[in-house]
Image (cartoon, rainbow, N blue to C red; front, top):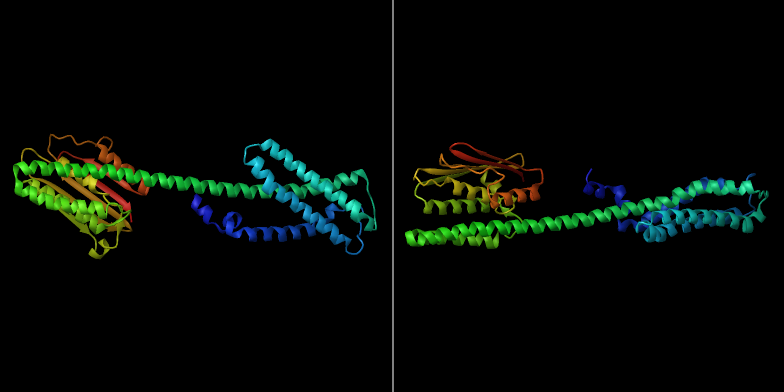
Length: 363
């Protein structure tokens, strides 16, 4: 059971949620009233004196009030001032002193104000010690249950703060990783335009048109936490079309093995596949003018998205593995860990002629 499950537990919620504070105290007051009423004999001296008239109830409610005075003194004074500040020995000492002082007060108030109205009066020292000892068997567990509740409340609040800070840190890190990926991608595109302007102005014009679509995506969709899968597919298609304009011996195929309607209902973090496709483009270049290709497949099955990217590579090229394939690959792996923790699968394989990436994420 993780922290969120514990927090959502109804019993834990009753103990720690501020909305139930009044209800908690009412349950405590009524519950202890019943307990004390049923064990009130432990506060009577040997011989079980019978109080005259209403004095038995006066004695009972005096005991009841003093027990709660001990309880709330511990709950709102001793625990915050000593226990939560790490002064444990002093806290235990004072808590014991409060219980003993409270029990002695209960006993002497009973003797002074109520025992004259009993039928039997036995005030031996052994009897007094026995009554105080018996009372401590009820008093210590009673006030320390307040300490336990305070500890649970403190633990829940501390974990809420830790989770809030963790989520804030993750959000900041994700934004930083996205900002590292996007400038790198745009830099490559602008560099391609710069080369084409000199060698083929007509192609450079087409690239500029496509590049404007990239910038539109970056401005309006990449800054969102989630984007439609169709938008991501269109983004990759435009990217590969750009590459096809730039290179004469390059082909690509992008296949979606799911209903078109599903593509318009699935959201995922933006630029999740860009690094893999960019890496495929980079390593599919063949300077001997051989035909090169990239094959992308996206399939939805059992609430999981399966992304596959296969690219050709020259025989003499050494494709880096996932551990040293550049900053972009490191960033996307870290981003996947932050987004999906251990719920994603990433498999990178290389052969003599192909480089393959398989990614599975929950949707």
